[in-house]
Amino acid sequence: MILKVEDLTFKYNSHATLENVNFTVKKGEITVILGPNGVGKTTLLKCINSILSPLKGDILIHGKSIRDMDTMTIAKKMSYVSQQSQAARITAFDAILMGRRPHIRWRVSDNDIKMVDAAVKRLGLEHLAMKYTDQMSGGELQKVSIARALVQQTDLLLLDEPTSSLDMKNQIDILSLIKRVVKEHNIAAVMTMHDLNTALRYADKYIFLKNGSIFGAGDVKEITSKMVESVYGIFVEILHHNGNPVIIPDDGLKAA
Image (cartoon, rainbow, N blue to C red):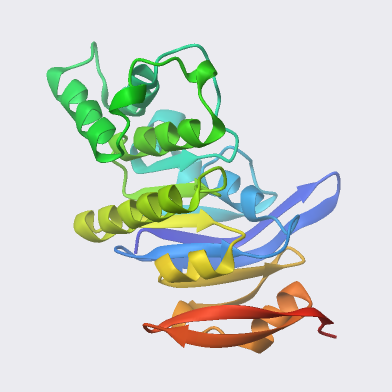
């Protein structure tokens, strides 16, 4: 087990955004956090990464609480890709190289450069490597951020809407790459997504958040229409294609 979230509660202006959240994440698995806008999906990722401090509860990585870790130690164990990529005026190559920062002692090594080169090629970013990030589109910045997370070489990837600015082809390319990296290196990923069908195609496990708490969780192949209807308030039908659930909304009808 890589990640364990225990009794996590987070309040914003005295309002409980997350309440008593508990779940675990195993090696070799992708877990997707689902739910409507405003239920705390991004907040949960930020608590896991110690960007936000929960009111109570604990986050354990490899059985050790992140409360006992400094920022650099956490960065060696988990990497985070936010929805809003920063566009500071540095080249894409240097932005990706920043992912090696937790591992750099005195200076950038030849191995660090080789790892960035490999990530650039793996994500097809050769034409962007020397382009400044403040001149890039949202989709280009997103791919650079994912490359940075991969060269960070952590056991846990935290991905907040990792494909929100990408077209269909790039969504498939990026999610296929993330799944391949998770399986090949026996690490784990936790990501938030709004597109249920895309999420369920690439994830192994799902977590539904409703009103700041976990409403349901399990294997994506076991997801039910009743659960989706309860979380999103619309009637749906679930079909299966190649073993994966496909959710078809019933347009115009709302579930009770």
